[in-house]
Image (cartoon, rainbow, N blue to C red; front, side, top):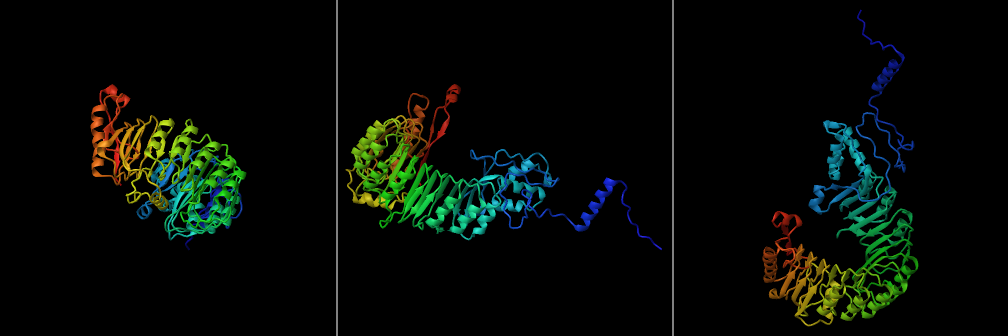
Length: 574
């Protein structure tokens, strides 16, 4: 009779109990973990835990530890490059995630013998699809991927046209600590998307939704108002494609920045945002827009007294709107941008100057302001104004531009595109897709062709003269100028071009004659070869928004070594 061998349990109380437990585990199979949440103890099924700061218990064999509780968002963290190759091929857009700098992955070895810190640095550079695939390799990789998602405080995501709201929800649920969210929508945006964002991102402070050409924004004003009222931490909201709002009432004590574009025929606009500091409202270019901008500005003056930056782009801008803005008396206003208001005149400039004498930026592009208005601007803002934009203002001549640069010593940026235009020209450059401006230029009084422009300024850094087809001669002596735009300056004579800008980095010359492009290149190359060795002399470089060829730029260390280092300056023709 054969006896089957039965192993005897080892003696000893502690070791016997552990052995029996191990034997029981072997009979039950591999342990899959608890069905309760490791942070609050509630069942996991149908549960969304808000205790993001508590640590999640991990197995003793785990190679990493959970990130520390999220601190208050103070600055942008390192950006994780989520460059999905398929996304790049289809749209050329990048996706990024920002995680906390405090994360320490440690030096323990994970699956494949790779140090945890090394694996962290590798996986944080993977696109989303690759990270999801990497999480399936082994337990160590899965834990690292989970920690990467949970540590994210900023997410930039492209939503393809075929994607559903579940795609966005599945990604957002992996990032419970998101503070900044930027979505590039190529599909439909509706109330379901807003509800998904509100549910998945309880700590959201900054949200931006940009729309592609194929996207449709179906969010109404009531839905947007409820979202803003419910998100009590929201500080910044930027949204494109808002043509279906119809009207809205925004109430928020935390909102400080609001950008809405593609607005059209709003029946009502009410803002109850006492801490709002920046507002940008971009309306559609249709003449049938029935929005009452005067009433809107009056409401802003009663409820948003802390506004510092105001941008309004609408063909319905008028002198009455400017008077309402002046009566609002925003004491902290520093930047004012009123675009496409053909009814804005020199009287409007006088109203602005009488109420806001500390402006740092003034943009009246597309208005009917003349040289007299520029004189008022120079008299009121000589000690504050650093950026002046007067593009598509046909009543301004080269004399007014020269006067502004001479009387505004702090000026760093000036845009005079399409101001000095040839009446016989075919219109603005194709890259400047501004239908209303081109129509205004064609129907307005034009100045004589063949004007010359002489600018000498010690602080000017950016100068835009795009579409100035009536400009015949240009003389620039701007040692700090680094960006020059001469796009479509078709009548600029090469022999009447003089550029003395040693720090010029880029020059845009699309639509210019080949002989003019050659003159720019010749001045840059020849001038730099002779003058670059002497720091007291200035180079004959290009001008605004253009990158010119290569020229030598002396550096302090180069003079010690007795040589000049070559500096790159590019001429852009696209």
